[in-house]
Length: 144
Image 1 (cartoon, rainbow, N blue to C red):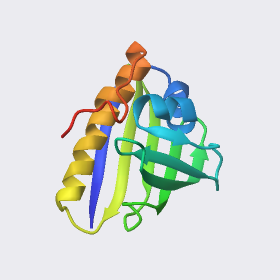
Image 2 (cartoon, rainbow, N blue to C red):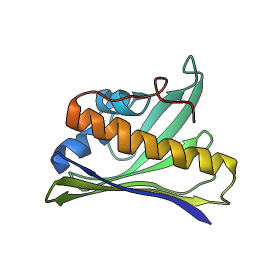
Image 3 (tube, rainbow, N blue to C red):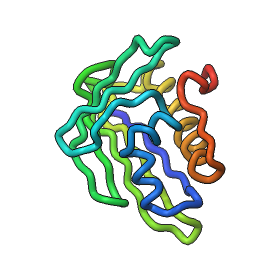
Image 4 (cartoon, rainbow, N blue to C red):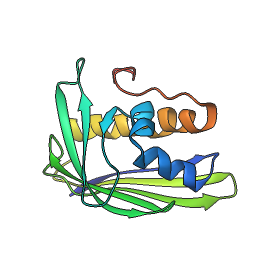
């Protein structure tokens, strides 16, 4: 098994990082179009593709305010992988975000593509949204 792991520092509060991962408008501003309630047990739907034709559904499995968010893919290309975890800690510079997408069967081309994309969305789009007020969500992300 292989995992995607990223750690970044964001110059904002853990509460603002948590909101960016759990609120529909915030997710849509840094990752991709989101439809969600943001409660444990609910399913969030994310749309990709030029016209939003590719759908991913994630069950929200854990929420610990300002500390942790966990998802499990229930429909879409990551259904055979493990948990998505966002762990947030206060840092002297703001917040440290540790992201994990666990349980990839192998480090194939799709894994490498997703690893690069998560790196962009977290270290550029999310960070810029929270520090500068503007993200670069799909479909405005670079073609990697």
